[in-house]
Image (cartoon, rainbow over all chains, first blue to last red; front, side):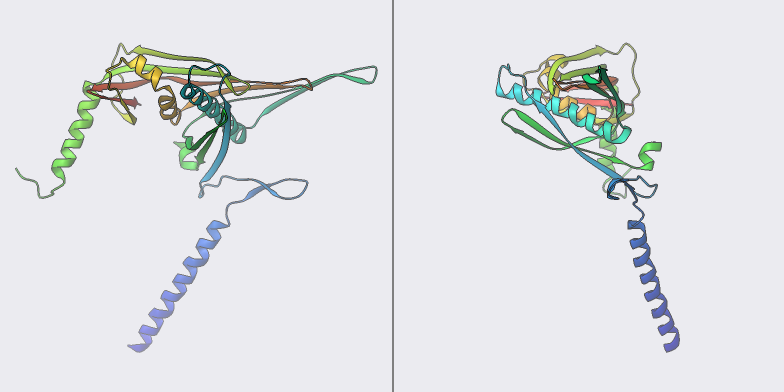
Amino acid sequence: MRISTVIALLLSVSALHAEFFSSDASEQKVKCVYSGTDGQCVEPILKSENELVITVTGLGVAPSVTSSPAQAYALAKRAAMVDGYRLIAERIKGVQVEGQDSIKNMMLQQSSTKTSVEALVRGAKINNTTFKEGLCEVEMEIALSYSRVLH
Amino acid sequence: MRSRNGNSPFVFTSIALICSLSYSADNYYIGYRLTTKNAQPIEESLTISKAMQPCSREILSVLSLNNPSSESLSSLLNHERTRFLEYASSEEIRLQSNEKISPEHIKSLQTLTLPMRCYAVEFNGDLVTISLLK
């Protein structure tokens, strides 16, 4: 009777240990994209068993001529939301960059860079909004997971 | 016949309310576009059109707006445009962004578009319920 109790106790303790270590292992499954220069973690990779949350802060400015402070706030917030969505799209989808330099007689005449992004964004939400001295900051986040992508 | 479960009347009432909402509400197609230049809004358009055919009855999300002065849908959405944008954009938006950077200046142009989607709109006294349909 006592031997069976001891065996049961040992089994339960080993099961608890196994669960503890497996939870540690799942937390370590979030891998990173490492930069080539300094080896720092640049961006975590979305794995099938984890959810990846991306947070951005969009900035918007009210037009110089508005009929009321409330209108200025509303317009600045809308502009900040657009900027936030742009940042989300850039982080998730990436940016197309096109550069053009004109050189004449070995001298730089003109230089310009164009960036563009086009995306469809689903499921982003606003966490926080602050408005100070005409500048509106909107903190937005989007959660990415395999289930959402497949849905 | 009386149910053993005390919560059943509440559940039936809720189902009846949701069904009545989806049946009695009018369907509207609503779309929105906002263009910003250098982080300032320059152009905004809200398009509302009554649906000629009934839409799907499956509700995805609901927004409730106060309407104490019994305004029409278009004028209410003009007043509450930011709230509506916040609500509808959490479902789906399209974004197009272009930036041009040169030593003289930086110019950015962004367009956010809420695609035309069908909404069930119900006017109920001082409250307007807008439900996005699938």
